[in-house]
Image: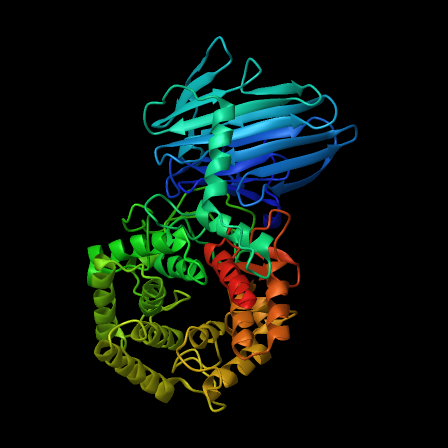
Length: 569
């Protein structure tokens, strides 16, 4: 049996434990897994044309389905064959160890005897380091190494790493794969691993019954929980190089923590009762602000170090994509992230969650805004340095939000700075119709400009707010989806996919205007863009009805989480 070719993104499920994540395809092929952590090299990389996959798939002809167990990232592949039904329960074991992953797979014969084909092909270093020092114990356990990583595979039922497995009717068979950068501990019973994993998910993920879509809201929180490490850092996505548009050159490595995305998740976790993702966001972002001050970067590795620069892996890449590792934001400054940080701090203050270090970080961020608000920077979309409108308005929103949570004299100072930024931005960045334009040098509007009014930069009845909403609807929407901006003379859908983040922002903007019915239509349209596993990527190809970009995209799930809760309130 050879490895499978990549599938469309909507058919992949995410297994994640906070420290790393795997993608599992519809044929039971785990084709992506970095170890031991998110930003380390992959040991399973067939998703982007490398060596390495781990497959459990029915021998008979089948059709595929699957589902997550509620409030978790425990996935159940389900195959209906010509004679019976087979399920494979899949998870990365929790609680997670940052140095050691445990991948659980339990094959279940639902009705009759079943046969599945199992194949393990580990290759570290994005496929460059094959398994070595392989040994098979009397009980069938395999041990070995790939690069500097130690490997143990328990439950293998053959003489090699590829075999057919028979499971009797009503029974199950466990496969446990461990990969560690340190010495492996004694093996743990599979039942105990499953019980601990179930308990961790049930403890960590609220039910969100006070939302308009409890199942999807709970799932969005589980996705964000699965992307968040023990340091509090939440990676933007599990993957690298998945194309936003085929052969367009927009292929990035998102296995790092963007401060902006982390703030979106924290804000979503603070809508009602504060949830732990709020404290995670505060903990990680405050540490970065205090550590780096005026050298603050837009993104970091989960351990708080800067991401590496972009390099190539010399792999084919996902079809239409590229094999880029690292990210160019390691030499950028993005002003809007400072405004998002102040919004996060204001939300935390409302819940009494700001400690002394957080307040120190608040002062640093205000100082950075004061010093840099008038300088060109890369902005939310990480473009070349310009005087981006959205960045200034995000800072206005953050300053106004924080002004409501501090003593009156300090609040007056922050409001005064916000007024100054808004006045200058208005003078430079309004088009003749009164809508916000992208920058003084760029005509046309930007869907990101819908968010600052929602966050309190301007009131909903402000003419600039309403004119911008009308301009975005007129020029940047198609069939219930929203594009970021028009990058050139082409229609937006010909240049790139719609941004699902912007679709949820459009829903919030209409809700702010009091148009509940329209807001709900935007929300429902965009949350339905997922496939069976309920995961959302960054973009959506409206014409082909396909997800585009790295998967799953954290900030999209964060806005779904926020929107669903706000609409219930």
